[in-house]
Amino acid sequence: MRSKVTIVGAGNVGATAAQRVFDRGYADVVLVDIVEGLPQGKALDMLESGPVLGSDALAFGSNGYGDTAGSDVVVVTSGIARKPGMSRDDLLLTNMRIVSSVVEEVAGHSPGCILLVVTNPLDAMAQRAYELSGFPKNRVVGMAGILDTARFRSFVAAELNVSVDAVSAFVLGGHGDTMVPVIGSAFVGGTPLSKLLPSERIDEIVQRTRDGGAEIVNLLKTGSAFYAPSAAIAQMVESILFDKKEILPCTAYLEGEYGIDGLYVGVPVKLGAGGVEEIIEFDLTEDEDAALRRSAAAVRELVDVMARASEAN
Ligand code: APR
Image (cartoon, rainbow, N blue to C red; front, side):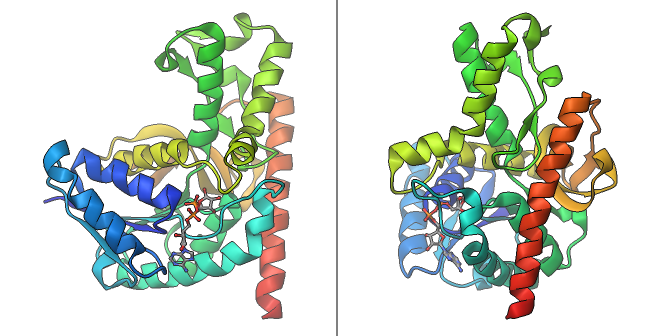
């Protein structure tokens, strides 16, 4: 029997993620949006691509949650995206309200699902989803680290003229200006990156990675990235549905790991059928450790703003 994946938000990220999952054929896809006709139209178009692609999966669009019932994985992409000049944090309160209403519906209709949060500011939205869903921490996970790491790996591969497959790396921390590329975890075909590039060049690549989302927003002008984000979502969905137990940088709830307690932050995790099955603790340098804590503090500030806004309502 095929699995069932619901994707909430039929915009750029959600619809492209739905397409990537549908194309592989192993899961039926339900696309949900508040805009009438949008999820229905995109899902029908997707379904009609099945005979050409060889996918027997079903794709269905809806403005409600009845058809999402019993989903194995629910991906939350609903919300507003950045425009030039905006930071991810500028989206906070609007997206908090959207994510809150969505998570209540999802928790009611798919109480056993794994909730994959994508809406920005990601770490804060994952925290919100965890608190509102009542799900155990392993079943609420955020997508950011794979995307940030993919950007870093792309730039390194281009710089060294090697396959992206040869480049392994981990970008941890919050999904924002405080993200933490762990240079000690970056290898190219087994050789440490630090032996292949001068540190000034690595610093430049790190900075471009940090600004990677803004670089695309500035080019697109009317929205933010979606090809790479949706590819990262599909990788996470696959690791969960096939119980692959990949070690991936994801946003997970920490309870003391890395010295951080009670907060969603990007760390390496083992991702399988149980969701976040383990938090992997890397050896960090003193600088990286300090950067991760700074990053966590930035996430904590957003979480506090959300708490104050909720109290005021
Ligand atoms: N329920 C369902 N869908 C909603 C809701 C809601 N309450 N509110 C908004 N949406 C839908 C919008 O109608 C829109 O179709 O979410 C979709 C968002 O799509 P885009 O505007 O294209 O944004 P996108 O680029 O997909 O980004 C979505 O992912 O990467 C993050 O920062 C990005 O937070 C943003 C999110």
